[in-house]
Length: 231
Image 1 (spheres, rainbow, N blue to C red):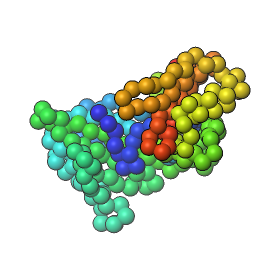
Image 2: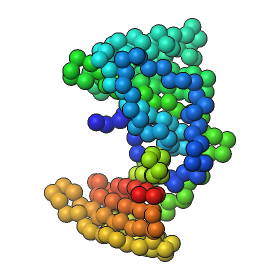
Image 3: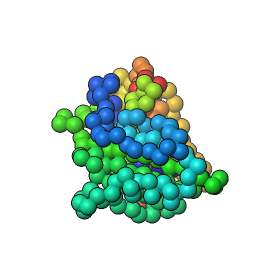
């Protein structure tokens, strides 16, 4: 199931926050219907330096009942604080600003007479924004997504970028860049499938691992870098 959210969810850097520091802890409580069963998806992640916390919920209530609950919770005469609603594919979304935090509910029918969805809260970036390791990039590269997360003792980062170089050239560039920093190549192979041509490179340095997947997309290549610390 995809996570779609307002800024679209879900894909970061070896974040340098204190281990137990989570900016969303300072946000107001996120109300939930009594029928909702909650499960953490990402306790601490960052979307382009914006701290976020995401939980999944399942409820015996219909999606409309979930929306009615949040309309009541977030009702406000002030236009800035009034909730907003909009469709997102099969999902229905309701969101509201409370204090300096932005709350989002994404809900859809679960096919069993109830509903399922996600609760997301984002907090303002801390005074000192997350310091990210610089990712080496070839000339002309454009960053499409950069999302950080911290779950279960693991710190992760996924960076998606595009450039005009071939997948093999990208693989050579990243192999040279990271082996020069002490990383070791543990796997490197070409992908040759109908409609897909690319290269996959995996490197390790102690408990850290990087996978670099480069694929040809029209006249450009898309490069997906996935970083994991303490895997």
